[in-house]
Amino acid sequence: MVTNNNDPSVFVDGRLIEDIRGLIESTKSQFAQAANAALVVLYWNVGKRINVEILGNGRAEYGKEIVSALSRQLTSEYGKGFTRSNIFYMIRFAEVYSDEQIVHALSGQLSWTHFREIIHIKDDLKRDFYAEMCRVERWSTRTLHAKIQGILYERTAISKKPAQLARQELETLRDEDRMTPDLVFRDPYLLDFLGLADTYSERDLESAILVELERFLLELGTDFSFVARQKRITIDNEDYYIDLLFYHRGMHCLVAIELKLGKFKAADKGQMELYLRWLDKYEKREGESMPLGLILCAEKSYEHVELLRLEENGIHIAEYLTDLPPINVLEAKLHEAIRMAREQIAVREAK
Image 1 (cartoon, rainbow, N blue to C red):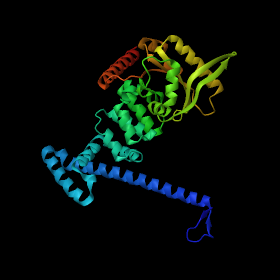
Image 2: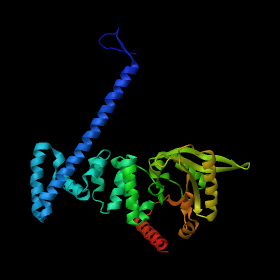
Image 3: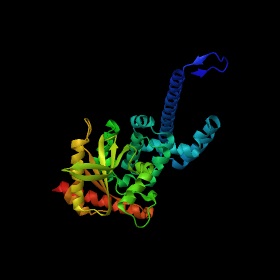
Image 4: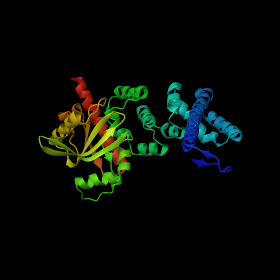
């Protein structure tokens, strides 16, 4: 019970207060979301109008002067939301998002600051990837910025696919909110935040991950939930232990993670296959998808991975980096990996 401040004899049921607070907070949240969506659509319409009437007629330099004058007028009337730089953001926004329906769909989850982070990404697929992942996983602007800086797109399998297939996968995500392994798993995983010394064991790596579990989950993806460490399974009276077990809400499946200090070996596939078959038989619940496996290793052999056809068995392999190279070195390495993967796909399709 809550006592009324004006009359000590009057009491208000605590559940009533909590229910009303819930209604107020829910309405405030809905109002803020609606206001954000309206602002995003407004900025898109402003950018489109300026683009069509001023900048789209081959009068770029004159157009810049008009934008400056327009900014001064609108700022004096409506405030700092219409600064010269922000108006140019609006113009760019309308240029890269020509489909108003997509803008309306994204505006429900992405704020104007989100759009400002992605509209200057030149690659359409890369830009759409960040927009859709941000929408589905509900990233903050800070998280979105960190994902872009961490070259997330280049570290996912979708970046290695032909453009048409990648576009289809992103459209499926947009239309059905269905996550696929190619959108979820990365390679490499950036684990520099673990602070490991030059020499460490698999147990040290596992322990460091659990100490920094929140940051590890952020690197994995926000739909991952921790289930168990050293999950014991028994087969023919022999005990085995899965290093880490997670559940992915978007894919509706268990994900077993094995940590390897050295180079990936063919025998690692058999070990993971055994774990996945056991999880499928004894742990998978009704309505869930087949369990998936992720082998995190210090180094992998591309020919081994290609010949073993791991992904056909629900197994994904990725390297991890506990000490990051300069970002330009990492980016060059990833672009080379993308090139090689696309060449391999082209060779397979030509057969």
